[in-house]
Length: 203
Image (tube, rainbow, N blue to C red; front, side):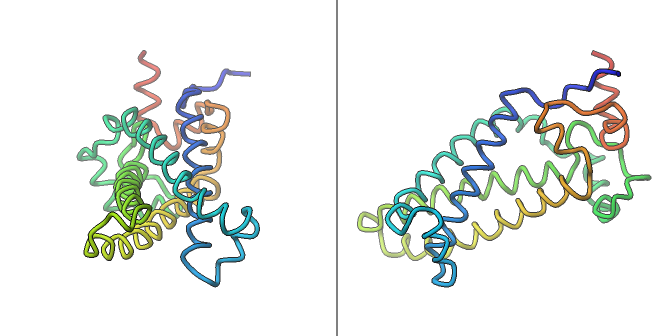
């Protein structure tokens, strides 16, 4: 049996799953605090006081871990000419019809866009969350803005993660293996990231 192709290091995978867990916790606790219709989640997550205490700390963990991911991957997430062509025909990728699309490197243009959107969301969530955490010390105008920005940004971030999960589990079978085991088959790499496969094979 041929050996798999290394895709993600242990540090990358650990950071990814820490970000995922902390984001899910922050999202669920945030939803329970945001809407009375979702408050039942608070009981599942330990009760109102626990949720009110845990939500900002879950957000801080997410922001710190995402900061590590940003520093590690930002250089690889720059969009090039092929990425812009890929985005123009991204509907083919969503239908799992990748033939004719520009060949992606380690990350395709959709993954790069998600990276930048989630990074921007994390920054806005952290800044607005800090304001909401210390409301008595904040100007009323800033507090009013944070009340609007925080949930609106959270909705965008949650939607992005749902798309990420859908694509990784259903549209591109085998993608999860790379983030769990750290490796993928050469056949998978050839089908979904051929440019990256060639670059890796030259090393």
